[in-house]
Image (cartoon, rainbow, N blue to C red):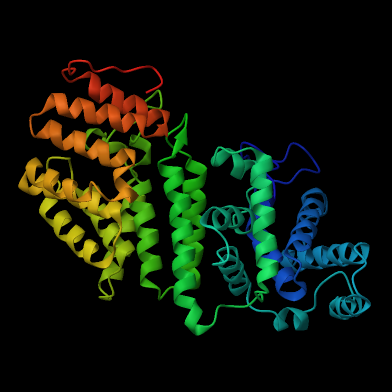
Length: 440
C-alpha cells in the first residue's frame, strides 16, 4: 500500500526525486500513524487510506529534493487531511460534515502544536489501528489481510502473493473487511476495559498467524517467507513497546525471536526442509537467541505464565542446546504438560506426544497419538501423520512408518514438505502394493 521505492538499499541517492532508504524507512514508519490520525478524526477508513497514500507519494517525490520537513508526521497529516477533504467533497458529503472538516483543518501548511496536543499520542493511534484491524466482526483471514495492509504497509499485491491468492481476491477480502468495520459502527477508540483482554488476545493471535505463515508456508513452492516473519516481529515489537506490562505479548515476541533465529539453517541450498535435529546450529542467529532468552527469562519471573510464554520457554530450551542429543527433553516435556493445562490446542497435544516419546520412548508417544486420532482439528492434517511416521520409525516399524510418511505427504500443499516426507519414505522398506505418484 505504501510502496517500496528502492529495491536494494544504498547510502546514496543516484536518482534525484526518488526517496533515499532513510526517507523510505521514515515514510513506512509514519504511514500507520498518519492513517490512524485521519481515521480517528474523520472516519471513512477507505477514503482516509487513499488520502494517506497520495500524501506519501507527494512526500516521496518532494522530500528528496526539498529536504525532510521539521515535523514529517504533521506534514503528512496536513497533506492527507486536505486530500481527504477533497475526496469527501467529491462524494457530495453532507454540508455539516464539510463544515466540521473545514473547522478541524489547520490554517497553514503545518499542524500547530495545539492541534497536535489535542490528538492521542502517535503510539496510541497505531495501537488503536491495530485493534481495529483485528476487530472481532472480521474473519481471521480478513484480520490478517487488513493488519498487513493498514499497519504493516504491505501492498495488496504483496499480501496476495504471500497467501497465494489472486490480487483481485485479496482486494475483495480487504474491501469487505473495511465495509464490515464501517457497518459495525466501531468508533476509532481504545477497547473498553471489558473488551481489552479478548481484543488483545485476537491481536496476538493474528500476529502469530502472520509469523507462522512466514516461517512454515502452508502451500506453494517455498517453505519460508522471510518478509512475513520480519513484519510479524516488527509489529509484535511495536505492540510490546506500547503495552510493556502485557506478559503474553512479551512471550509472543520472545517466541518469534527464538523461532526465527533458526531460520537460516532451516532450508538447504535448494530450498529443501532440514529438520531441527539435523540443522547446522552454527548458522542459528545468536543475537536473536540472546534477546529472546533474556526476554522470556525476565517475563517468566513475573509468575503470570500463559501459552505464548510457555512456548517461548520451550523454544529457549531448544535454542540453548549445543546439539540435538543434548536437548533437555525432560524440561521440555514438563513445559508441554503445563501448556496442555493452559490451552486446548491440538497442535500442542501433538508436540506433547513427541516430547513424551523423546523422554519415555516412542510407544508412549504413539499411545498419546491414538487419543488424538478422532480429533478432526489435527488428525486430518499432515503434521499428525508425519509425527506418527517419525514415532513408528523410532519404534522400529519401517513399513508402517513409510505408509504414514506418504499419507502425510498427501495431506500437505507445501512442495518442500512433500519432498521431505517422500524422501523420508524412500529410505524405508516399501510395503506390498504401495503406490506413489508424482502428485502425491
